[in-house]
Image (cartoon, rainbow, N blue to C red; front, side, top):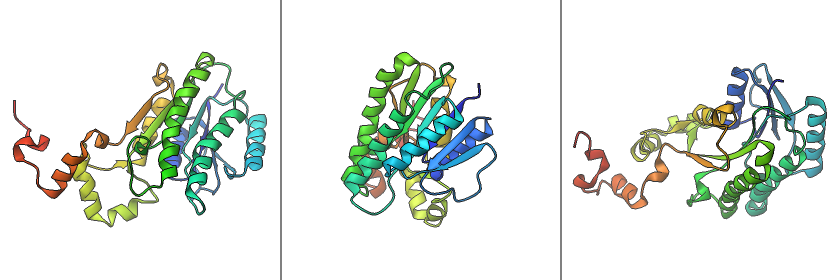
Length: 259
């Protein structure tokens, strides 16, 4: 039986990069999103249109999907709220309530055999504060981490693994032009990220592929942070580095070659 993957929020950014990678590896892929993809999808990727905030519409689309496409082996949630309206209720609805609704709708649709897994895509804002994001975003992303833990326990006996992947800022097709035209911002990331650069959507896709494959068959209930090591650094140390006020003898960057 061919492993089918459903990618919620797979028409933009890292979700689309993930869907493309799946198709390249021979997976049968269905992406679900409110808006059609910006460009024609490669062979092997099917698009379903559904607004996650419209409960009846989502239920209908998922019911038709399970009836017509058969069992699902992998399920990935890349969706996030982008729009107007109250940020608190919208973030909770799109990030948490929609995830729960899809999980409930597909509860009996997972393949009876083989590797099975669910991936929730979160953010470092689950544990840190991103000043440019509202309260609802932080609470929703923190909830995803606990949701992954809960479902990992609830579904574990059925052989379904559930993990969370939390990417830092990455270059996507939609945002690449912005970052490349703002060299100062790119240079700033090069300074503060331990790996010395921003990540790419394709790198997040490869991490997601690992978590939705037999290669991670004994990993469940975890939150994997993919931010190039940025969340490892103490904020005061970052401030010193950016302002060039750090003491040379205390800088990790000055320890090269020492024993």
